[in-house]
Each structure stands twice: as structure tokens, then as C-alpha cells.
Image 1 (cartoon, rainbow, N blue to C red):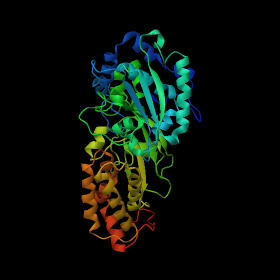
Image 2: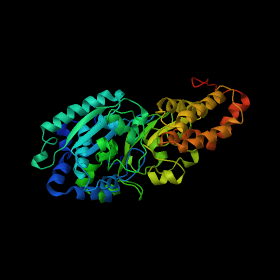
Image 3: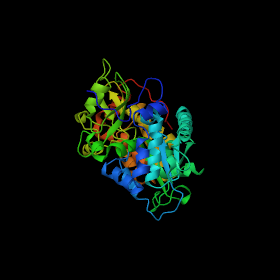
Image 4: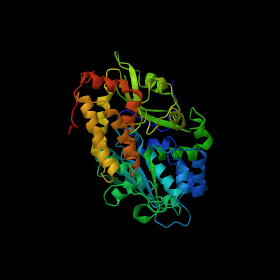
Length: 430
């Protein structure tokens, strides 16, 4: 079944959409309408009414985040769009950047207008240099067309965009760490009762949104909140979602589908099903920091509430598929090895527990495992929930779900003193 393409309406093979093509599809109409007809508060309310949930993983309503910027807060104010996308299996932001960059630009301008911000910062990882170059070029084009800079479209509203190339660490995706990184400080999280919407960049109000969140804003302003809500398949969700699918499927890729599309439909129809000779075993439904999803939930509706009801997280909607020939101990070891490397090392539960967990998994995979390792893995994973930010608990989600749903596979490694899948442990041994 073909669903309406909203975010990917201008998607073309091997090239981005130009400014003219974006405008022909209705681009910058929302900005023109907002500046001429709507107050910032009205734009905020329309996004609240549309129930636009943050697409970066947490699912927090974007409009409510914007409303947290009070009228009496100081200036200048900042909008940050995160295209860092360091989570394994997640590549939707890169695809969007290479599809329709002006949709990103208009979304950021409208978001800036909604909170009376003057500067927008697009946070890009080093390996996305092509994305950075594309955005910088299209920002210049948008500025020449009068959509950016001083007195946009002859209005009192002024807004500019800056591309910030990050230092390239996963921890930079955490909001407060990202703010520190932009300011040239060590990219570690900050615990504070004061939210970034009150004191963020240089102690000024700062709103952080994932890029996929912001590209929905022009369409909400143009077509209304009810239209946006009706795009979804489930009553508690709204809009469309960019689902990434990777693994042993016939057509891995990024697909725009209604929020709440069933996992089975995403994999079987849009990703083409499993490759010949391979069967679905499990998946991580929302990127590397989510739980393995048992096969019994293969038909789950992929929205925030539905995935939460089966004890998991939608996260970024990046579906990493594992087949029956894949060793999940080895897969989990590979993931935890990544998280150990990417930890900022700021707090003890993350700095010490993750390498300990990696060592235990490496020993199990190498045939040196013992039964007492299993409760040790459980205890150490629980300790990560005492860490400074959500990095360490997210890192151990594959570990805890491996023990919850595939413990027999772990027992086989221990009892046979080898990997039953014939794989060899690489790295991680101490």
C-alpha cells in the first residue's frame, strides 16, 4: 500500500530537491502565513494541538517544550536542531538532509519564530560532512531569497542559521552535553533543576529538537493540527514517521509511513521481508539503546504508546533486524563495545559498569563464561540506572533484554564453552 509522502514528497533519486522544487510543493508558504497572520503563541498552540511528539527518541511533545520558554525570559534565544545521529542503525536525518534541506530550514525558522529565537544552530557529526555542506549551501540560497536574515519577508522577525560541526561523540546527542559541546566545553551531561529552555547556551533560553521533529512544523502550520493527527494510524499518535530498517532484509532503507504502522508491515512490505534462507528472530525497534523485541510482538504498532505497552521503546524508530543465524551474545557484545568507547566517562556507574559488562560478555562469547556471570550482568546493568544521564541505562537495554528473552542462548554459550553459532569473540577482553 502506498501512503501519502509528506516529508519525502520531494524525494528524488541521487539528488536533493532544489529551492524551486520545494516552493512548488508549497515550501515557505507556512513561513509566509505565520509571519503575516499568526503570533508566536498561535504557532506554539497549533503544534501542541497537533500532538507533535519529539522524533529524537524521547517522544516529548514539541509544543510543550516551546511553551516552557516564558515571555519574560531573556534574549537572545536559540534553537538547536540535532542531526548528530550517532546511534547505530539510525540514519533518517542524513536521508532527510539529502532529500529536502529547505524543509529543515523552514522548520527551524518557524520554530525560531514560535519562541522568538534569533539564532538556529544545526548540530552535525563529522562523518556527515556532505550534509553540512548541503545545508550551508542551501542556507545561503534561502537567505538570498529573503527567508533568512534580518527582517524576514519584510517583518520585524529576524533569524539566522549556523551549521556547527561537532566533535563526533555519541554523548553529544544528550541535550546538556550538546550545549556544552557547542560552547567549546567538555561534552558531558549537566544535572540541573533549571531546564535549557530557561538557561541553555551561554545561560540563555535554548530549545533542542531533533531534525525530524522540526520538518513536520511547516506542514502543521499549512494544513492544521487535525490533518496532521489524521495522518497516523493510531489514535494516540500523530503524523508520519521515518522508519529506518537494517539487517538481513531484502530492501534495507528509510521509509516514511504513518505513525503506528505495524512492525510486520514495515519489514514484510516496505523492507521486502527477510532475505532467502533467513528468518526473523528479533529486532531492536528504536536503535541500539532499546530492548530486543520478542517475535511474539512482531505485529506491534510502531508508535510511542504501543511500543511502551509491550515493555519497549520506540526510540528513533530505527529497526535493526536480527535473523536466526545471528548470535545475540556476539551482537550484544558488539553494541556494548560501542557504548564503552562512546561513554564520556563523567560518572562512575557508566565509566566502570560498562567495561565490566563488556568483559563478562566477551568471556561468555569466547567460551570462558560461568553461570554466575548472569546475575552479575543483571546487577551491573541495574547500577547503570544510577548514572548521571540516560546514556548508560540505554547502553544496557540490549544486555537486560538478552537475559530476559534469550537467556537460553547465553546458557548454551556457557555449557558448550563456545559460541554455538561458530562466531569468535573480537575485542573487549581484559
